[in-house]
Length: 329
Image: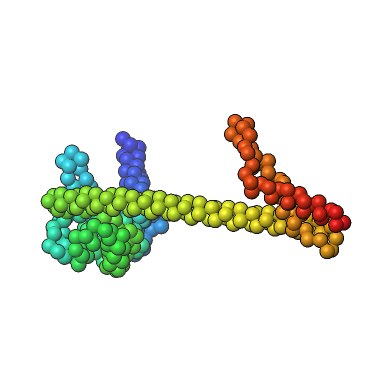
C-alpha cells in the first residue's frame, strides 16, 4: 500500500506535467501563424515549426470571425461564426451574397461579388479590427453601392472591368490599416429587373436585325458595283482590243500598199530601162492592163460568149502601141 501510494504520488504529477507541456506545445503548419500573448499582452507571432509556450503566462490569442457560404439545400447564403487561434496566411476568397444597388438612372439591380484578399500583417488583422471578414464584407457592400450609384445602367453592364479595378483600389486602400491586401474583385452577377432585361433583349434583337439588313444591303451594293466594274472593264478591254486590231490592220494595209507601190515603181523603172529613156512606159502599162482585163470582160454566164462592144476596138490601138514601142527600139 505504501509503494502504491508513492507511485500514485509521482505518477499523477508526471501526467499533469506531460499534459501541461503538451498543451503548451504548438506546431505551426506552413502558411499559418499563431499570435501569442503574455499576461494578456501581445508578445510574438509564431512562424511555421515547433514552439513552446510558458504555462499560465503565455497563451494563444483566439479570434472570432464570421464566414458566409452558399447553402445548396436552402438555396441561399448561410452565415456562421467560428473561433480559432491559427491565422491562415494564404489568399482567401470571400463570396458575398446578392445585394440590391441603385444605379445613377434609378434602376435597382442585384449584384454579388467575389473578393480575393490575403493577410499581410497578422497583428493588425487581429488587433485593428474585431471581425475581419465581416468588416471586409460591410466595406465592400458600401463601396459597391457608391461605385454603382455613380454609373447608369448601360455603363454598369458594359464596364465590369473598370468597376472591378475601381473597387479593388478603393478596398485595398481602406483595408490597408487592417493588414489586408485586396488582390482582386470580381462582379459575379449583375441582374437588372425583369422588365429591363426583356426590353434589353428586344433592343438587342432589333439591333441585330438592323445590322443584318445593313450588311445584306452593303453586300448587294458591293456586288452590283463589282458587276458594273466588271462590265466596264470588259467593254474597255474589248474596245481597246478592237482599236488595236484596227490599228494593226491599217498598218498592215499601209505596209501592203507601200510594198505594192514600191513594186510598181520598180516595175516602171525596169520597163523604162528596157524601152529606153525616150519612150513613155505609161502607154505600155495601159495596154498591158487592158489585155489583162479583156478575159474578164468577155466572160459570160453559163460559159456563153459575149460580144465585145465597139469600145473594145481600142484593144487594137493598145496592141499597136505596144508594137510601136518595140518597133521604136
